Length: 265
Image 1 (cartoon, rainbow, N blue to C red):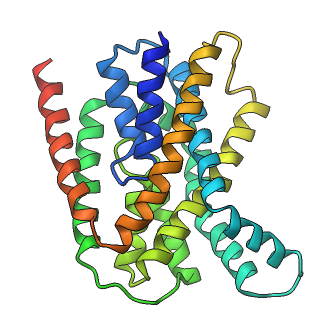
Image 2 (cartoon, rainbow, N blue to C red; image 1 turned 60 degrees about the horizontal axis):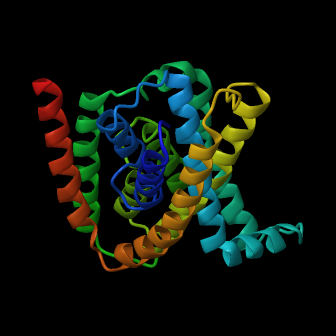
């Protein structure tokens, strides 16, 4: 990015909005448009990917006990709850992995100031949150069938403006799953997908750091990581208490403003 302040602002936005159901990608695109980001899509995508890696790392820290438990369960090499959970995570990754591979270049072009698209997608996110907030809480865990449907929501959330956490948690809750378990599954399911995408881009030469602002990337990464630690913990509490409607209203308002402003300028 152009300066340190921009990197801090975008890092905060990513760290907070990755977990809060208001679309991190959508807010990053709006913020970059406001801050005058004139980078080519590939360079802009690099900054976005770095920030997503930071929030993936914060997820690992927050859920470190769960992740260690899953690893220990998997190392028993016997079918158990931990292996079942891992298998569901893998199932949930299939839709996004397919869409990401088949339409990678098309998706990249959407990360370049598509304010109108972001506005409409934020309104859709708000609708999902509104519906999910009114669903009854249950003790039902995520099933394999649920995992695939939630994975479809995650694939749709590749569009800027659709909140990944909002879409996946809302879908899970609307399917009748327990809200706390839905949040846990939503946050853990994205970690291998993000890490896999970053590894693929680095090995394939898609992400080049030669012309990048390393200082800006580093500051953005640290800011997003710290903000992510706070937001991830807070979001779990909000889902339990059915406070998603506040974010629904926020998404509606920001979406309408984004669309309105885009037609004025």
